[in-house]
Length: 248
Image (cartoon, rainbow, N blue to C red; front, side, top):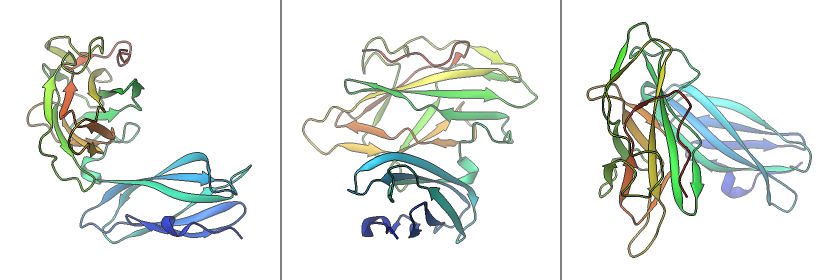
């Protein structure tokens, strides 16, 4: 029977309990005081310990102190598993783009993003899943959070992408418009991972308020801001063709 590497046995409330030739069993524990959505990135490894591929598992609405058991299937050349990353968001703020419509009537999510020569571009999407119209005119309000979901000091959120890079598609001025039920809008996060003097900033989470006073939604764009200290955000635009492509 194969075994998990010692470093993968427990990490941020995730414990691999057994690994066989065909699967790996794990447990996720919520050690916080509120219900949480916990997402775990596993790496399936080969006999040499090198990565074969990655698998993501999410436990939604895990109660405080509760334990959820799961399984990662192995196959082909995979013979082991490691925990690469654990992200935990309060369920009340979790982004569930395919989930039920929240009381706010809007679903906010982030896409997988794109990177080109150190430039990062991640799209935000807002969908009106409710029964009333949603008025937008401006920029999402953002709060950058560290791995413990604490506010990160020293990061300037700037409107538009021009101060980060040209051609990101995030420089249109704000325009007022209304989303009918079922319609969507998009915004764009833009940053560089340039590292010069000082300590680089890595912040997994961004708390998003679609409009001033709106209920927050926490997304996980995995910001690697280097030492730039800046995050650009585009104004909300009606989503007719999806998020803009990143510039070069």
